[in-house]
Figure (tube, rainbow, N blue to C red):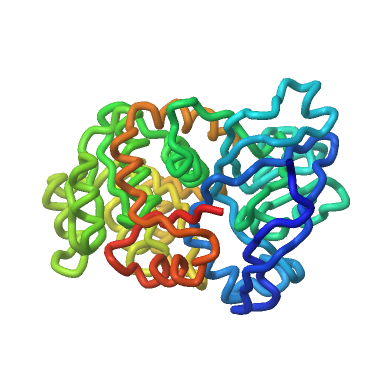
Length: 353
């Protein structure tokens, strides 16, 4: 029996969260209603909650945040049924759903939908401008979910959104077997990028970061560099006999990290960026031009979620080890504090509705 009301964490205004009862949404014809089993906190969530993207994420209040989630289908829209979805399907979700009609959507780049934010035209970005998954139930388009294997833990499945983003970023670097790689940042995206780079045949993988996360990077197969203790550029130049690395995956979001990326990339190499700095960063454009460096920006995970789910089967132990904390949804304040402050060596923090 599906209730009429559900528990949810609602953002009423910047830094104004409450756990409350809200109506359970009826799925539209191309939607499904899912019982949320796990929802992971994304690094973007605290910024949305703090009101750092006014008028953009969200466009208006109230908003239920959350877009890294997994659960079970409990109700189907008519077209969802006809298209092969069933009650009981185990699924995970992503945040983006394009309008489906604009030139970018027709190219498969729905993450760059030209009708972004126009929900009346069918666009959705769950947990950002559309109602998200910090709730007991989630109504979502079938375009924004994927089936997960029966043996995939829901907590791990909730991390398939960021894992598929990492895969998109690594694929966009055009990595080739044997390439040397620097991953700037040892957070969740950086650690997941190690696994994706390994799967694509990378040679030497180096990770710049700090703290306990560097230990995880080493266990995942990367050479760690603590940027607090070492000069990252000098170390990379020493390791590569002055040539630099062929691919850089930038996940740090800091000015120093981005500039280091430009300094250590080899001639003809690529810097693939997923981080979103608080403000624009100056880069050495003369070097970018004269060394023919490809500078690639990446947003979200267009068409990589099913690939990521398949790849996750090879890295079950590593992905599970990234989930450091679990809280009931009602304890969202503690969960957010632990995540935001990196308490107790937290990495991926999951809430259970």
